[in-house]
Image 1 (spheres, one colour):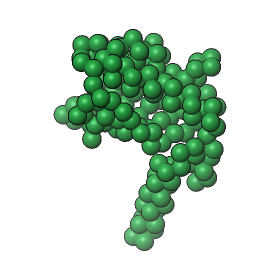
Image 2 (tube, rainbow, N blue to C red):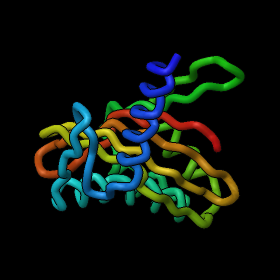
Image 3 (tube, rainbow, N blue to C red):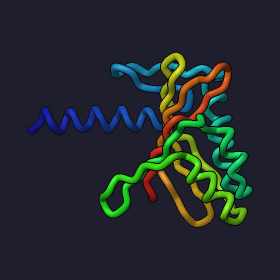
Image 4 (tube, one colour):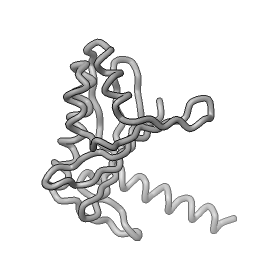
Length: 149
């Protein structure tokens, strides 16, 4: 029992560190540096996503995503997964709204990245997880998975 509790504490500590070390990620229990350029590139993609929601403009949001990107979530315990165009259409059919986010986790390994944000679009709050791939000199989101919070 003590080993299980210790293991849970180690995992919890690692997660806490990952959320509180802005330019760092955890790999094999070591804190790894994320370069300023990597972080700025990922944030640029996320900014397009949020700005499109703020302005109710799917064309802005499309700059964040790869053409083949998907969006997934669970609804009533059932996995839903759709082409990212569904998100663009949702923004296009909506109204401009207040929108912002906080980057809570970032891990970059060469040309791939995983990012987590806590976002708010109007009154709705989400935990968004993104998988990104570097396409030339730009980061593109290839997968958006979210949960309402």
